[in-house]
Image 1 (spheres, one colour):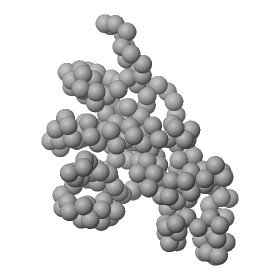
Image 2: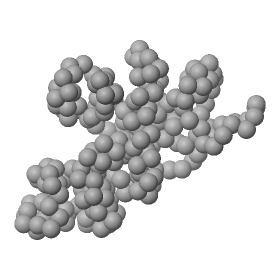
Image 3: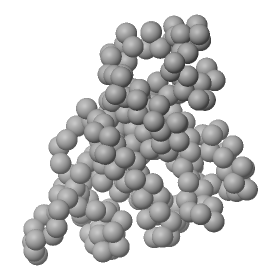
Image 4: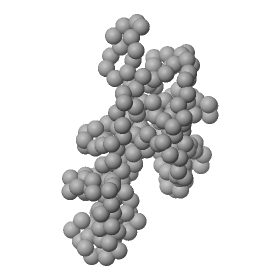
Length: 222
């Protein structure tokens, strides 16, 4: 990223520092998630997206980050919650049948196996309450998005692409086949597909120097 691009983005709010700028010559400090957002914005810029589209897509990620902060979720807790919800969906638990969950034998066994794993041990009753309270909509719209943007991948794995598409009500984000399904449902037949994990892998596993570098906090994904 060149210094000119960085300055332009800063002036238009595409990258957002921690706190206020205090004067000339002072380094701005950014949350590590801002480095991830900036990396995705670079790909969108290379693709030809305009500044308004980039700001709208960045806002999707920032909304998810705020949601995680409001629920006091670390990356690992959000990953556990997202996995739990996906298990419920896979077993038809559209209404979160917490009261009758024991009636779903396969689901019960799957949850027990998950809760015995390292990630599953983070699945507290408080996290389950978030899933119950938000009835899936907040989980899909925020939890999964936060897990994606808050990761610091040092290993590259095969993952679904992330699709962004524009509707009259703004830009939306979905993963892979879900992106195709919801885009068609919204009457949209063109989208931008990004390999987000590969983009973020380059940030953390293959860092490169440039004219302008985001000075980030060293907060790891917990």
